[in-house]
Length: 321
Image (cartoon, rainbow, N blue to C red; front, side, top):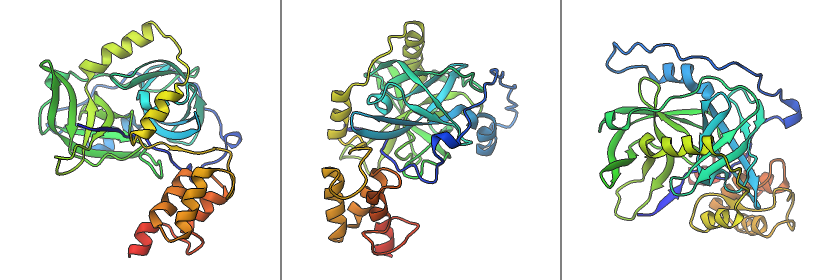
């Protein structure tokens, strides 16, 4: 089985610069109100978003020559959980709240095997999400993934059902989820109808014998002990560029390139995409748009499909329509 990490490089479209944004205001942690589950379907997707959406953050990493994004969620007034592969290239990533405000985080520890990392911040965070009982989850149960899928990295809620459980030594290690989770959701929570974390979005099952891609969500009984251990004994790891580039070489979604590159001739990776885009390869145009630094000539060339057209959709879609 090939497991591809679900974080991806992205273009930070239409976002204000850091000096135009107010930092997240310090807030005391708020206790979760009791959830009325007299309705067997529990909370609706909209109600889950209203109650818990502000506990989910966009993660922006920038290190080892790689830009990337993912999702993190609050587990205590000063801690968040995300995926190891989201922050392996950057031990001090930026967090972006739903209102666009930003804060800096520090990776206090990670575990490669379970693909989990714990972040710490100075500001008091909002409602901490609690873990669900893994054994109480059931096939067919509705769960809702919250996160920031690429390329737009807009906050999104995706509802689906538990298809089956991936087990190891009789333990439910992961959930196979039937909804379309995109790049950037990685590290985000999948919530039950009562707002508990059924698991952490981690990967996509892209094995060749599958009829379709299936999202993989690691379960609480695997992750919670790891998270608790990291919080109790933080070791503050540094970015691991070898691991980050290894993920890249295995199709992990991040793209190499100089984050300071601006125009043709500045970076060989972006130059190759530019050349292919200029030759009519619309996939290369889209890749250049999403991969290149914001407001660069590279980005503009990709956005216009190689100076061909101004479009609000991907070049591939524009020229196939």
